[in-house]
Length: 274
Image (cartoon, rainbow, N blue to C red):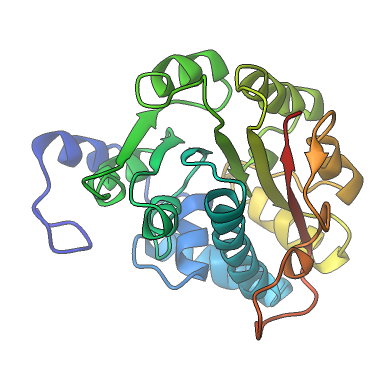
């Protein structure tokens, strides 16, 4: 059995793929579809198209989130000097993954991905291809278990040195706001001074986006909660935001000559732990 990339799957990967429910859409696979990836099924494509029918801006939002990830990683590596990254809720690999961006700038960067989706695990080999000088590692863990994440990540990362903690469009899976903030705080608490939080998420300020999200939630898929910009900003409490702060995604340190959607329904930022 070959995977989407024409590579031979191991028996363990076959078992994981066999456990995937292809009758219910999945957010990671739909996001992969919106980004032009191939790791999705017909049910995901149908759900993605229906979402886009109600909110055509979802393609711009998906691309804006991906572009923000790249700019945030570039800032962390080249300007902040951080060479250790912990990417929680990484999702399916597409192009310009965290380790690819980081290690293209500094080959010795060490990157740890965290996810608990079986399809992501089945494609972990794609994520694990990094530079010989650095390290790229995958942890099979739920973000609701930060202590497990810390214990496993400590085998790869040096927690006495600054770490960049990334949450890119995933915290809506934690529908309880206090719990979501607690997860971020508990992970940041173990990181040393000089570490950073890079985070973005979709906002609930557009009625069309809210309607599309509700329609997706009604399919029986795992629901995703859109939050207010103020709630997203709350994840950065007690940290020092990097200019220009927590802002709409296209406004965060845009690339020179960048051409893209000027308005998307998502905000994000990067902040330093004092």
